[in-house]
Image 1 (cartoon, rainbow, N blue to C red):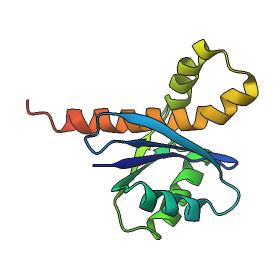
Image 2 (cartoon, rainbow, N blue to C red):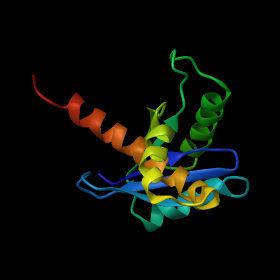
Image 3 (cartoon, one colour):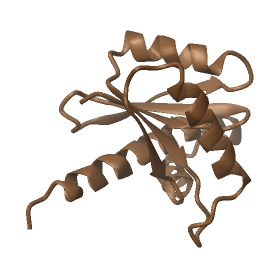
Image 4 (tube, rainbow, N blue to C red):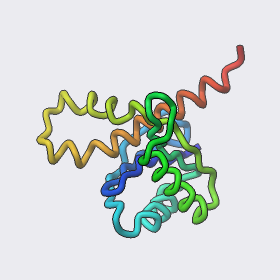
Length: 140
């Protein structure tokens, strides 16, 4: 199944996608969240033949929902009303940390890092989702 992962933010939103076989996850884009975000995502869903959405849910380390998690949930609810494909929420607590770790060796400038970080974080969210999905389907 082809999934689109979304790392929602008030200013920037990172997107990542996987192949139909769910083997390769790739950062796709970082888009401006402040204007027409849902319309942009719907266009990407159509252009990329996306079959399901995974939205990152930034829970606190104690499993509570802070303000950003609540904003992400509201965004997911708005998006769900506009699409006809499944939408999943995925715990993304450590996705930004993992994304920064991956970018560290590249030695990008701070500005270039910011432009890539959200898409790489979205890829980490999708990797977490697919790993969990795979382990949930394993027969004991």
